[in-house]
Amino acid sequence: MKLRKLVLTGLAISGLAMGASLSAVTQAADQKPNIMFIMADDIGWMQPSIYHQGLAVGETPNIDRIAQEGAKFMTYYAEQSCTAGRNAFFTGM
Image 1: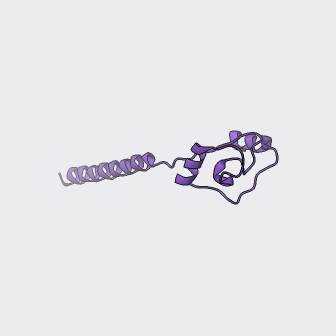
Image 2: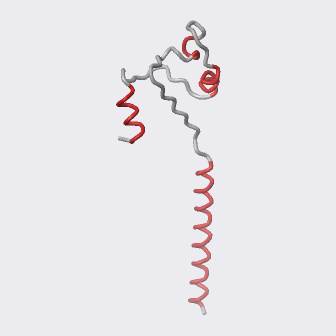
Image 3: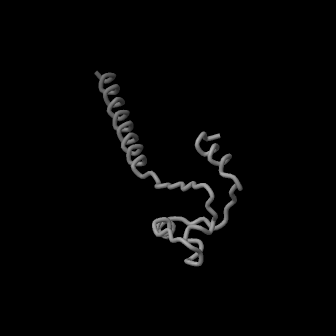
C-alpha cells in the first residue's frame, strides 16, 4: 500500500512539473521578437530618408517610422554587390 502511494505521489509531482515546464515554453514562444530585413538592389545607405533627413530626393515615411520605433543602424559594412550577401542570407551559408 505504501509503495502504491509513493508511486502515485511521484507520478503526480512529475505531471505537475512537466505541465509547468510546457506552459513556460508556450509562453516564451508567444514573445518572439519582430525582425524585419530589407534587401534591395542598387540602393545606397543614404537613400532612405531617415538617414539623409530630407537632403536628398525621395521620402520613405514607412521605413522612417520603423526606424524611429525600432532600431536604426548607423555603423555597418556591406558588400559592393549584393549577390553574394543575398545568396548567403537565403541559403544560410
